[in-house]
Image 1 (spheres, rainbow, N blue to C red):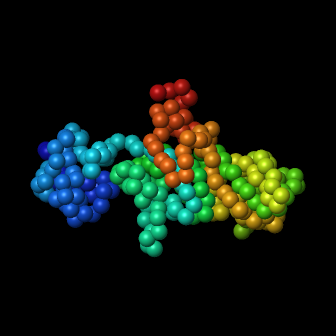
Image 2: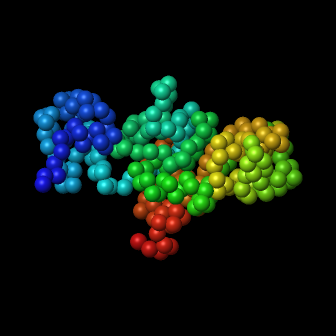
Length: 250
């Protein structure tokens, strides 16, 4: 039995676009197979054996695991698509040449910046977002006013938000301005606008919020809007944190 499929069908399944869009790319001479420009729309390919590229970038085969890290800017949505045509993290990935079918791991609010993963690895994404696995996420938050010790103690022990008590977390002051306080907050859950709502309970409105780390991985080399694949060591550590490998295991 042949494992070959039509090139436009495979490109569409890899998230490049509709079959019609993929046909347009082929007609424009932007698709190559094994280094040779493809022009025949009905061409068959074997994704297990052939190297398929769009605009010079090799597209990952369906069984290839892809994990990217992005420093999400504000005003960019953590979604795959948006009905209002606002810019999304997937748009950013496409602009940076990552054309595989990817999904964001969890979400950051529109007005929150920082570290976010994009992947096609469903098991990893599930473990990194499910509270049962207690993956710690670190945020840097600046709020208005002077945050006192009583407020920090209350937030660390858990507060009531819409009938739900937040899980214990860690919070520490890292800077003070004339009319603001900057803190580092570490959570093992991620309810909608949780940090903003916790501080608002005590009269402190959030000025700026950014996720700075996943577990003990900080990705400090990434400028706002930049992205890259995880290094082998970073991916190994992330999978350890998610319980997918044992410490020290390849």
